[in-house]
Length: 191
Image 1 (cartoon, rainbow, N blue to C red):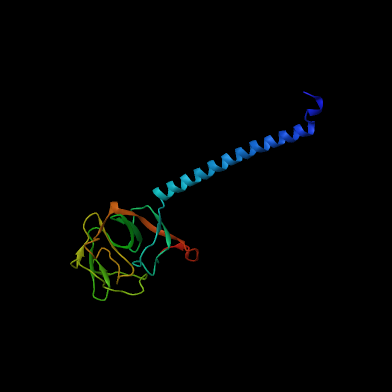
Image 2 (tube, rainbow, N blue to C red):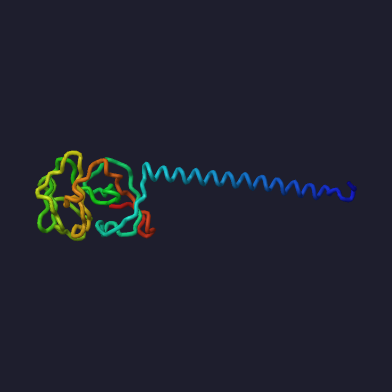
C-alpha cells in the first residue's frame, strides 16, 4: 500500500462522524418505532377494556346523536335514568337511552308521554314526543336483570317497546356514552 493512498485525518474524522450519525439515526428510529407501537397497543387496550369508540349509524337517537358522529363510552354497569348506553344486539351495537331498571313498571300514553312506576318521566332531551311503534302490552314490568331502553327519536326508533329487541340484559351492555369526539364542532359531553 502506498502512502499517498492513505486517508487524511480529516477524512477519517469525517467517516467517523458519518458512522456515529448512522448509529444515532438507527437508535432514534428504533426508539420511535417502539414508542409508537407501545402507544398504539395502549390505545387499543384502553379502547377495548375501558373506553370503546363507537360511530353512530341511523337516526334513532336524533337530535341528541346524529349519523356519522363518533362517541366514547365508559364501561360501567351503573346507570341513572336518562343515561345513554351502548349495547350489543345480535352482531350490531345499538345506542339508546336508559329509562328503567328491573322491576319497574312502564306505561306510554298515546301522546308519547312515558310513565315509570306511575310517575311522568321528565325528558328534556326530546324535541317531540311520539308513541311510535309498540308491540308490547302496556303497562309493562321490566323483568329481573333487564333494562328498558328507548331511542330519542321515538317515532322511528326500534327499542324496548318492540319484542324483537325487548329489554336488554346487563351482559349485553357495553357502557355509558359519555363524550362526542367527532365532529370537532360538537366535541364534548353527551347529555
